Amino acid sequence: MKKLKDYLPWVCYFVFFLGILIVDPGTHYIHLVARVIIFSLYAVAFNLLYGTTGLVSFGHALFYGIGAYITGMLVKATGPEFFLLFIVLGAAGAALVSVFIGLLTLRLTGIYFTMLTLAFAQLAWGLTFKLYHFTGGDDGIQAIAKPAMLAGSVTKYYLFCFIVVTICMYILWRIRRSPFGSVLNCIRQNPQRITFLGLNVYKNQLKAFVISAFFTGVAGGLYAGLDGSIHPDMLHWPTSGNAILMATIGGMGTFFGPVVGAGILTGLETIVGKYTEYWSFSIGVVVLIVVLLFPRGVLGIKRLAGNKN
Amino acid sequence: MSVILEIKNIDKHFGGIHVANHVSISVKKGEMSAIIGPNGAGKTTFFNLITGFIPSDDGTVIYEDQDITSEKPEKIVKLGMVRAFQVSSLFLEETVFDNVYLAALSNFRKNAKIFADRMAFKDAREHAGFILDKIGLSHCKDLKASELSHGDTKILDIAIALTLNPKILLLDEPTAGMAPDERIKMMHLLKELHEYFQLTTIFIEHDMDIVFGIAEIIRVLVQGQLIAEGPPDYIRQHETVIEAYLGKEVL
Ligand SMILES: Nc1ncnc2c1ncn2[C@@H]1O[C@H](COP(=O)(O)OP(=O)(O)O)[C@@H](O)[C@H]1O
Ligand SMILES: [Mg+2]
View (cartoon, rainbow over the protein chains, first blue to last red):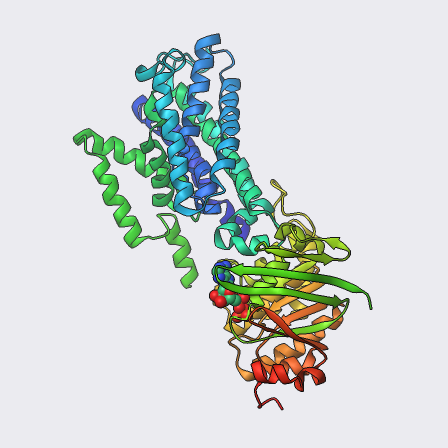
């Protein structure tokens, strides 16, 4: 019974993301759901830090952007044949940078950690304009080709994203359920006690930070292929903020909550964005509703109800 | 009996307060000892100093012939000096079992496993179950730590410490906030655990019935200074101790 409950979200995940292919609502919507998939990975990877370890990074745009830019630049430099490899390299680049940033920021706690991660990300955002020759500055990088296998139809790239993201999600899911995942979850609750279990809080946080950055980088790399174009905005602070929003709206206390959050955020952007450029206002309203009515996020409701029984 | 813990001249200031004034203590293996003294005397700080949680200004801590003065607290825990807290330090969202189980994972060095299911470790599971049995919390192992009574949170805190297989167990006011009957139970529990696990136990305590009931050695800390040290009978009659702390009622 317990086992079944554990896997139910996975069933929903497959039914939704594969079902959309059967329903086949047209390329516009497939493209939209592909974005949801990519943002899902971004949000879930982010939530390993945020919801699980209790570290509020406001600089994840940096890792998302590094993944995207490395992938994009490598494709531009060599061609699209090794697209998947470039995504992995982009993620590795994000992870490498995160080691240094983690070492520097994790010594600080609370708001100071948050602000310093923001500062680093903004610094990198500024750099993309200065390093015009590599990054294309303001214009970003355009016409990033995909390998023949993935080119042509949106559905092909959708499936590719789905497979890559699902593998990453499975790894993150396993990590969350591992002893290491428990340690992270307990660091959030009581770091002092973790120390007096004989465990090093800082080292574990750093590991979580790097893992989170790696998978955030994968998401960024996938995004580079979606429209074939990337832009400095990917590194700008609203991108970092989106991670916090997706996890908070969907439910930071659950593994799949951020996936729901990614769906809601993308949905709002698209649907409300059609009528007004002030679509982000609607996000404010949703966040307000969620924070006031479902403090544990949309997927957290179920847990709350379960506790009362 | 051999000496397991040797503290020499440990010294600490907090701003203007001298919280540890050149304290030297030598603890024998297997000893059950108490630290007493008025609030603010520096008892908790003393634990913080010897467990590496806060750095001392001066002095050395020798544990099992090894200088651990500037070791990290987690290293000292791994060496076998483990503590429980004045205010229970738990993982409140986790069940009682999971609180102890996490300690068991640390004890068996399984905490860094990153892909295995966290429940996959039989040795850790059995150890956690055994400790809960021994300490008498098995009946509420599926409750969340936040749902426990105050007394049970103190017991769970000690259970977590015990799970780490300590050689020295440091307890900071194990009966703080407990009703009198709970305190008596705690006293018997401490004595039983001390003997069963062959511990060296140092406990800070305000309840003099418990202190004089089970401590073999009592140390008295007043304003950061160790003013007396010895067996209960000696402390009971110690002029300075009576003046500074005990008052007349214990006599
Ligand atoms: N981290 C700290 N920083 C500054 N002062 C502290 C700190 N910890 C304790 N103190 C002060 O040191 C004194 C001793 O505190 P403590 O060791 O908790 O006493 P006890 O446990 O004997 O009641 C108190 O005056 C307390 O306010
Ligand atoms: Mg104290």
